[in-house]
Structures are given as C-alpha cells and as structure tokens.
Amino acid sequence: MMENIIRLNFTKGKKTILQGQLNWSNRSADSIVGISGISGSGKTSLLRVLAGLEPEVKHHFRFNNICYSDYQAADKNIGVVFQHAHLFPHINVIENLKLALKAAHHKAKRGQANQVTSHKFELEQVIDGLAISDLLDKSVEQLSGGQKQRVAIARALLCQPCLLFLDEALSAIDKENRLEILTWLKTVNREHQLPMFFISHDSFDLQALADEIISVNDGKLISIQPIELSALSMGGGLNRAILNVQFDHHIQEHHINAYRLIEADSLKPNNGVLIYAKGVKAQSAITRILVACDQVAISTEANFNSSMINHIECKIVSILPLDETNQSVEMSIKGSASQMLYAQLSNYSIQRLDLAIGSRVWALFKLSASIAI
Amino acid sequence: MAIFTQAEWAAIFLSLKLSLYTTAILLVIGVPLAWYLARYQGRFQSVAQAMIALPLVLPPTVLGFYLLVLFSPQSSLGQLWFTLSGEQLAFSFSGLLIGSIIYSLPFTLQPLINGFKQYHQSYQDVATSLGFTFIHQFLNVILPMCKPAIITAAALTFAHTMGEFGVVLMIGGNIPTETQVISIALYEHVELLDYQSAHKLSLILLVFSMIWLTVLYRFNRQNYSWA
Image (cartoon, rainbow over all chains, first blue to last red; front, side):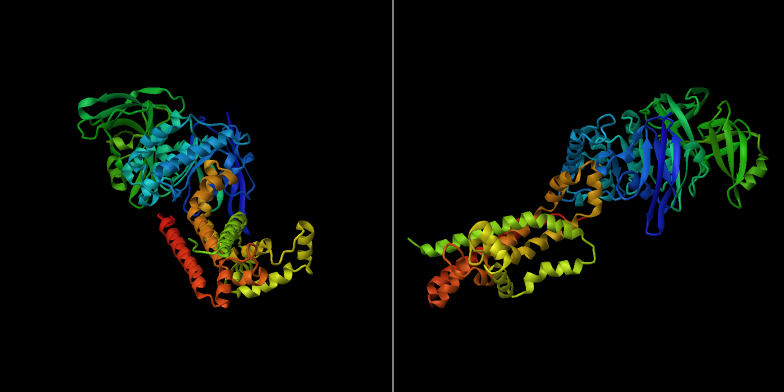
C-alpha cells in the first residue's frame, strides 16, 4: 500500500494559516481526494502550499510514491485549476490551450522536472470533453465565467500533469452542465489514471467525485476519511447515500438503466439488488449513484404498486434526530454487507409506522439519470 | 535638389543614431529594472519612484550641468573614461549617449512598470503551475502579454531622445557629426537669424513626432482589457 503524507505549518507573522499532518493509504493510484471545510478554513491555502505556490512554507507532501515537496513549483507537474480561471488575456482560447502544450514540452525537456505523467491528453480530446470547440477563436473577455472555467480545466489537463488540483473549479458552471463535467472528470480520472485533489463547497460534488475526504477546519488539517465514512459529517448539506453500481442493462423503450450494486469492500457485484435510473446507456462500467435522503420514502411492506421505480428491502440500523421535527434513518440494504441508504422522515411518520432499530422496511425512491456519475 | 545641407543631414542622422542607441540600451536596462521596480514594495519605494520621475521635472540644464561636471577630465569618472577609451567624455557622442540614457529613463520605465504591474501574481501562479520556469515564463507569457507596454516604452524613448535639447547643449556642445543633433542645429540657425533653415528643421521634427505618435497610438491600441 502506498503511504501518503501531508505535513505543513503555514504561518504569516503570528497568525497560523494552516497546519497539521495527515497520513493515509490510497485505495487506488487514481483516487480523487475531496477537500471539505467552510470558507476561510484553509482549503485553498492547502492546495497552494502543496502546489508550491507558497514557496516560503516548509512542508512535506508525498502522494503515490512521488515526493512532490522535493520539486520546485514549476517542476512538480501538478496541474492547477484556480477558482478564478485566470486565462491569459492577451491571447485567445486556443492559444491559451497551446501555451499549456508548450509548457508540457518544456517540462519534458527539463531534466529536473518530475517526469511522471498520466496518459497523454490530446488537444481535440479535451476540447470535445469540455465542449469548448465553439470558443476556440474567442478572446478571453468574451467568455462567461463558466466558459472560462471549462477552458481553464482544459488548459490544466494539457500541461500533462500527473496530479490535478481543482479549487472550486466548477463554481461558476450551472448545475446541469456541472454534472456533465463532473461525469467527464470522473471518466478522465479513470481512463488517464489521473488522481485529483478537489475543493468544493458543494457536498454533492464531493460525494459524486471523491474517494476520500480531507476535512479542514479553522486552519487545521482535521482528518482524511473514505467518502462513505465522511458522508454523515458533510456539514450543512443533505445526507446522501453513495451507491457504487455496475451497469447491467438498458431498457430501451423507457430510457431506463438498470444497475447492479457493487460491494464497496470486495468490489464484487451483488446479484440480489437492481437499481433503476432514467437515462441513456452509461459510459463507464462502474459508476456511483447518489440518493439524497429527502427523496427516499419508507414502506413497512413490499409495495410494488408504486410509481417509485426502486423498492429495496432494508433493515434499519440507526435513527438519529435531525431537528425538532425530522429524523435521519440509516438502513443497510438486505443482502449487501456494506451499502447503506438514508431517509429523512418526520417524527410523525416514524411514530405512525412504528419504526425502530432492526425494523424491516422497503426504501422507495426514483432517480433521474443525472445523478449517476 | 538639396532640401538640407550636408551639415543638416549630418545632424538628422546623428539624432537618429543617438535615439536608436539610447532606445536599444534603455530597453536592455529598463526591462529588468522595471520588472524589479514593479514588484518592489520596500521602504525606499517612494525614493525610487522620485528618482525615476526626477528627469521629468528637472530642467534639462540642471541635469546637463551635473553631467558636465561629472564628465569633465578633472573628475574621476572623466579620468577613468579617458584612460579606458583615450577620449574625453564631455563633448563626445559617448557622453551624449550617457546623458540621453539618464534623461530618457523615465520614458522607458513608466510604461514598462505599468505593463509589468498588470501581470498579477495570479498569472504568475498559473504559468508556474503549467510548468514554466521563470525564464520561460518571461519569454512565453510576460513579454507577449506586456508587448504593448514595451512598444510604448520604445517609441516614447525614441521620440523623446529625438527632441532632446538642454542636456545635449550642456554636455555635448555643438560639434558637427559628433554632438550637433537636429535641435542644436535648429538653435544655431535661429541664432544666426537663418529663419528659413530653422523652419525646415522645425517642420521635420514636428511632422516626425506627429506621425510617430499617431502610428504608435493607432497600432498599439490595447484590444483587450486586463481581467
């Protein structure tokens, strides 16, 4: 197992900007690390230090057997997408992209630069993937905020990095297009074996993409946890179940995909449970489905006469109060050792259905295609 | 058909030569100096700014006078120059060139500093993260991005040197083909009450400056705003 280390102590004068140490092992070499924390907690500082953009900060950063802190900033081969795209204003979009190719060329020639790369990114491929082919001849000031961010992502990939940092890189992109880009980033991550560090204030983005979550709070590195474990601590947002699934079959006439549940620990498909979601045929074999707790209804008996297409037998594992009127019900899926579902239910419903820990229930929900990543 | 006399042609060529040399040398000195000053935040910032702006407000004769004293064979600089080159610095083209470089320095530095200040830290972060070392960044990003500022600096320096008078008069005198530039030749014509020749030279300087600046502003319009 690869041992990863982040250790840093970032101070300005007497003020501590960010400090702490994390050690962890990757589940896979191309894992996506989400960074979560309220604004001002030090998320951006973390990425800036690791990318070498705060050269005076002493730190240690080792990831995937590469000791990045041994390299100068320009030699690290970490691609960075900044929150504000910062495209170069004196050249148009395609020239901005070609400049990144030129930088990659310089890096490859430079002996002291980190020469580890992911699978090569081609110009046409990133232009297609980010749907920016209509923007190539435009000047930077003609672009909207979301368009700038797409181009900035393309540019960061074209410098052929072996690690990609994204700092709120999708914040200016509207919800629908964001899902498209999230899906594409996930595909890129798997196909190019490109690990990513990913800051987002949006718990949905993190749960959709991240394999691990680094929590940052008040200038301290708190922890790094697998995404499944940190789901409950994802502050503020709705609690969502993350289901790892494998595409099984497509029901052509209704535009519905059927997925088979994958066990998180063994990565083997669970033959008992099928999950249905609207949509065209999924691209990648293994995808992730997010089920928000407020979209799950509970029935105490098998009820197939429902418009909810998914009805999954579960056992209640815990019931925790959310606020004065609502409770969060955690359920384990029957026949699955690791996969959970969550439902947000009112006190009234819990009383009426007489739910308790150990109760046998059916979780009912429907999924729009967009939720499958 | 001789519009200008031989001496006048010599003065015109001397002015062009002086301007060309001054511009070339000032760009070589000015680019790194302006880059440094654009980022300098230390306690001597105001002093540095004042020193750069000084030639703008000082009567050229004051600057010329000090340079004359400095260049004289009695001064250590004048002596050193004499030992090295075998000629004296005052009343020579080399002396004139040094004077012009000092006198036109603000016209090179101001546009360059303004240009380099537009290259924010965030652009530098992007270029670094893409994998450009500083020197590659300078060649591939900074210089192209600051091209309008560099052209402005060069054009203003050239034009300003063409129109130089006070400093030249003090340290260069009026030696044909050595220190007699257009403005000095013009001055001589007026002193000799040769108004017709003075008109010719004045007109050529006026027309040159007008065309030069028009061309500069026409082709160096910043067609993008700094995001």
